[in-house]
Length: 485
Image 1 (cartoon, rainbow, N blue to C red):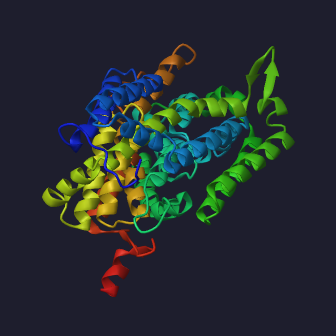
Image 2: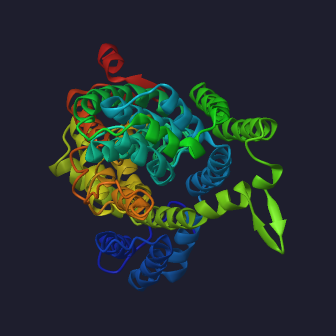
């Protein structure tokens, strides 16, 4: 098929939205029924594409466009990154990095509000190390929540601190799925390629730091209203989860982040991290070689196969949505939507940024079950609006990667909240002293997600951090653009 040939639909180009609409409706329904399942989301995408073909004027052209999107560089880059990150995150988990952080918190004798602050920081560090918000919540809640209750932390605020820490990692970690999707989906207008992950982490850091500082202050003010219990009891409870050697795994974490920020190829940075983590873990006796890969009675297990398996289904979802996005572009539907937005809503670069912020917010609310899916779905629209208004890919990535991690982390029907509540519920028999929390209890105690959402709105309204794309893809801050004019 001719690359410049337009994909035509019966009725109008807006019929290209049918597959995407089917996928979104089913995904939102799953979210509201607390039944989010990536396999069903894959099924929804396939069904949507099958239904969509009945509206295409030329079936061969339709499927050529779909297959072109399925194998696009944008999709394959994100998938390869996810597979590598899956292996890396699993190795860190095997290396007892959580136990190292818990050991540090107990040895520093923090309690009450101070422990709530520590829980936020430790969860953020773990999320930055592994790149998994869900993994952080499921892992850290089992250790930090019981300890915090024993040490006098406010239950709802403590839970909000764990959720907030997970959001920080999703926002800023170069190995997080949020960072990978947000950057790999934002294309340059004046040259080939997409936003570099390390560079976007660097431009995003100032927003995350400010929201983080605000959160720490709020956690310190409101985090210590619980009933304190003997600290020695908490230390006994956590004795089995302490291992100072686990802190050694912070070395590959820092190394990966530093290499990514310096502009080293992200695959090279992650590969270095995997090798370093493996060597340190084996040398320090944190895990045996079988923890990386083992086979018994024909069953294969270990960090490598399990890391890949954990990323497989969500990778397929991403590929399907990228294919739908490619169809929207080739049919002219995306251009028509963006032109309408520019003519009726967006009048300035500020308007474009606010529109991106609103889109990310809406998708984050509607698909709160899994913020990764919300990110995947909204990314094509953010890319189109940003390119139309000459916003640099870094700037688009910054707004998307931060805003998408707000509502999914504190809405009662959000996947993050449900995961945390499920973990707490499963601990009730083991720790009968744990207070029961409801889905709405963390609505206003997940301080970081609220803070970053507001900080990014202010950034969009004031132009703080705004940047445009130069003739050759250069990063041109708004202030410099004004001077040149």
